[in-house]
Image (cartoon, rainbow, N blue to C red; front, side):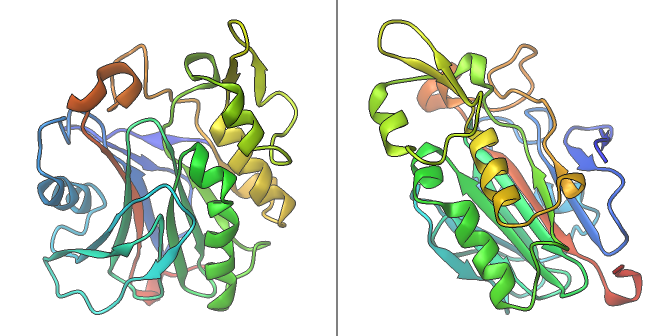
Length: 250
């Protein structure tokens, strides 16, 4: 399963998922760089087809903490906590992370009714935020073997050059081919590949992983990118919502 739907007006939805979930991410056409965060969250909810749904987002700090979202009133956007992953078991509640080159990941077990959105920069990857997100899913009855893992757009390996201190921090988490030599002592790094490998090692099934080849840096210029645009870069919203239980699939 690798298809995406690109609705008119911007954004993308993951296609081919079982009933019971809608997941996707925004583009610059939908959420431009200068749009306030709460307005971007509301546009993201409309993209998911739940315009009046509550939205949980985070104050992200490049770590591995996970917070639970629940009890947000309809139509409101709330910061669920200081963390880099948010988990919920509430249907109709949108969970979202924001990125501008880092790796956004959605984990979902539809049988257990558990949903997690995680933000993984290289620091969060070194702190094993993907594993922490999977721990949160499993603590609520989810299973790695049943989970879907959906990756939003992030900077590609060929555009992301890092210093030796980054590879040192990621020691033990680098799958083959994730890092290749760059200029001097620098390397080109595929952070998304590191997180995919971490999830596969925990038992997520390869056929339930979707990692589309979408680079935030471009070309084309379709997404927010901090490495390309610096401080003026906005943020991509990536996340999902569990739909009413009558449509849920096992």
